[in-house]
Image 1 (cartoon, rainbow, N blue to C red):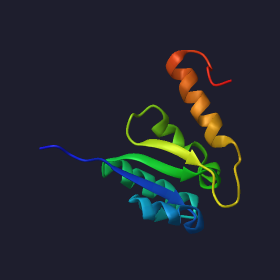
Image 2 (cartoon, rainbow, N blue to C red):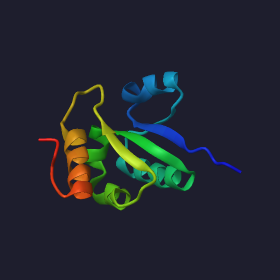
Image 3 (cartoon, helix red, strand yellow):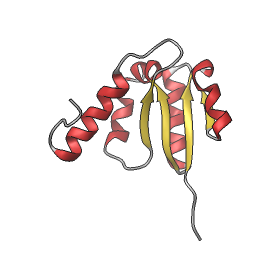
Image 4 (tube, helix red, strand yellow):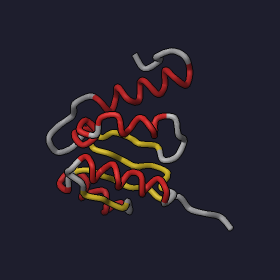
Length: 106
């Protein structure tokens, strides 16, 4: 039996609402503790990727560290309606540097 992974978007409702129109499951969350519990649940429920707003990720502190070494779920930081902080791009750069041994995105 083949299992299909799911994709989710998490953050403030205004920032993630549009993801539902392309078939992603959305999980509105504004409070960091609530988001941490939700991210753990999504990890257990076989979500392959979770798009997380940069603003919410910044409030979650070290909670995201447990997912950096895991293949699933991939936690991908995205800008929210409040704007782009650049943390999403920095996160991708760190991942690429870790994978290939050099920051090839600069």
